[in-house]
Amino acid sequence: MSTPTSRSNDSLLSSGCQEIEELLNFVESSVHTDELGANASRLRNGLHCTIGEKIWGGNWYFLFVFPNAHFDCVGFNLLFELNFSDEVTWLARIPLFHQYPSQSALDFMLCSYVSTLNYIKLRTNVPVPKVFACHLKSEPDNRVGVSYMLMERLPGHSVLLTNVDSLSDIRLDTFTRLLPTARSFHCQLSEYLMELASHPFDKIGSIQERPLFSRNFVVEEYVTPTLVSSEARQRVWNALPLSLKGPYTRASSFYSAIMDFNETVGLHYASAESDSGYLSSVRQCRRVADLLALPEFETGPFVIEHDDLSSANILVSQRVTVISLDRS
Image 1 (cartoon, rainbow, N blue to C red):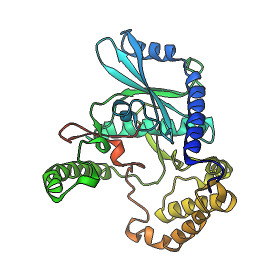
Image 2: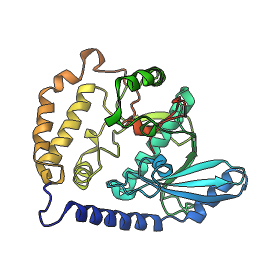
Image 3: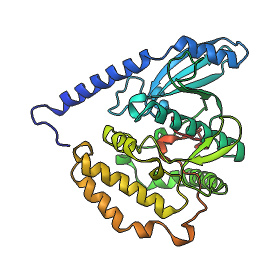
């Protein structure tokens, strides 16, 4: 999308921040925080609970390093710290409803997130936060006013914020000094990914626990927040028949469905994506589609994948020991 020449970049940034702030204020006004704290308190036998920091966006740990920062993307969630009188801290995670095609889609993805964390916690040693509760907006006794989950807050900081020299100042001796730490980090990460791969599924889709906290896990239709992260994508997604949303029993069917979806977005809403090159990029991917699905893995096994496993979403200790693989 082209930038209007009549407005400077500074004015565009200022306008964008104002619009984001208005949106976030609207979302926050929908949350009854007193009920949120009361619900958390009940789960801990009435232990006193107060609402702590409000955290916008996907990377809640930015709060501690850049407390006054503004971001041009607010992420997919609003989080509140829940501070108990015994110094335990939880997080309340609330999906931002404007990022989803419908309330039912938001609830489906929230439940899938909870289900996946529950599955990993139950079946593996991969470090993820424990989930204590999940409630949907539609539940008659949900007085918080929105769909939300309550989860453990883990210590540590993002790999992205690990204290290393500025890239512009890094010299060979710096790389040499950091090599043992980097090797240790990647070994830990590889072990966790291999452990996830040791728990395969026979379908590609979203993990759901039916009902939640029952330990009965199934694979249902495939959808992620990033897949429907724009209004154009949401329109296309809502128009798709259920039969095209998965789950998929063949890898080639999955890749074909994703490319069909992206091509439809490009054909009908090209201006809603970054530029006119979006559609040609999708079509170039289609040309190599046969190379994506390896014959030996066409029908599985299919493994759990973190759809945004970046340095921003891995928590580590001061010694760069991996504490959690998660996205807020």
